[in-house]
Picture (tube, one colour):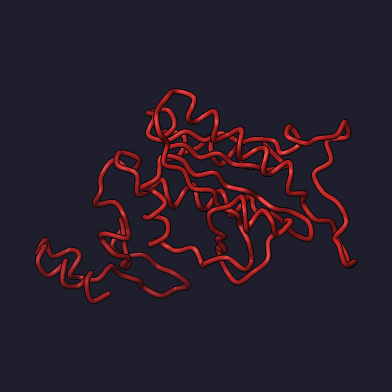
Length: 215
């Protein structure tokens, strides 16, 4: 699966994508991540990506032309091999649908996700209406830009791609989330003796499964 991220800060997620599971997934070619500098698609010699909002008000607004041009270019590159690519263009927005595991699983069925990261006061509404396929919000809070949202999306979606985690059973969406413990079974914390639940030490896997389902 291809992830194409459009941003004005192309190196901002480098360290995260170069570690752990995502690094291994790229090395084994289960996914590819390419970051595109929006300024490379500007139409003027100053590489201007934003301008003042019509109607007045504070802040600057991302222009529609560079984003539309970037998306067109990315799609064209993906289809140049005479193979039809199932692609989805996502704009991160406070007004978008709330991102969750169900959406992440749906996104994992595509061949390519093009992720548009906004900044400043926002993005020209024509991007949402005519360029993006849908708007996504990762929560009821405000970030300085869409880059962290893109990183979260790449991580969450990649987990659903076969081979990325190694074992399908490793998905918390499949096995559920429950308390976990490791050695030692007895520790002192603030002068109190804290122990591992005895059922986990019993070796009775039926009872362990029942306990985990209850939790």
